Length: 266
Ligand code: DGL
Image 1 (cartoon, rainbow, N blue to C red):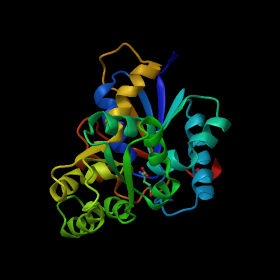
Image 2: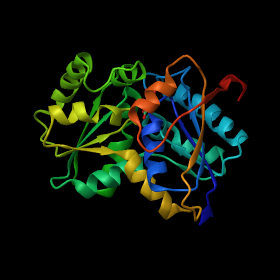
Image 3: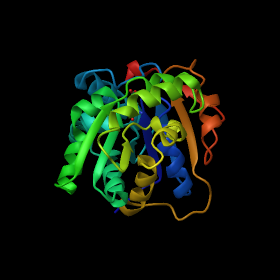
Image 4: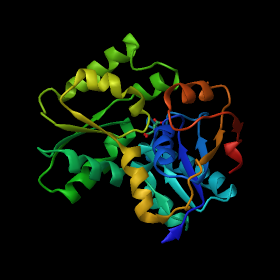
């Protein structure tokens, strides 16, 4: 088992913080470098080729910070280019898809599972493919929800009427499908869990970060420490209200300062 001291975590923006929050809640003593590509978010409306180019640069930045493994805390990158990144970089890379699909199958009674995600994620079919590999008889339905990421990045929370209307509109696509579980296939979406739950109260919504944070313990030898994990935050565009949005939502971690990276250099 690889030992893990310095972990890189990246996302197109704020979404990966929902994964980071769970990692820090469940694993102590880690030294984490978080990168949010706030200058180029959203990734989900781009082509797989562009997403892969961005993700390569994000990986190179994290490597320059001396990380020993990377968590791709982004559904869009995990769905569109995880194999390409694994081929190119030799350190361990963990995406969110396996953890999300395994957690959904573990809690679903009917094995009728929905996936909500960005356009690029849903069009990739990656979650559905993995669900069918793990459970060939599963019924799956993916729904593209391109407006959620811009809402979250701009500070619209689960209580905002515009958020609620958008959630109702997208989730109505599940009315006839009778799913009992929906994977929040984009790491931004746990910010809106309360709004999702209000519209579909009988459905279980899967937070992929939660499942992934436990998976890390099985995959890596983690520090034997009770000290809280410590995080250094980096973004590619400083004017996004990153710190205030992060601190408003997250309970296991605090973001005190954030550094800016010129991602074009990588
Ligand atoms: N958090 C990213 C994901 O999990 C958001 C994608 C985007 O930037 O559109 O898919």
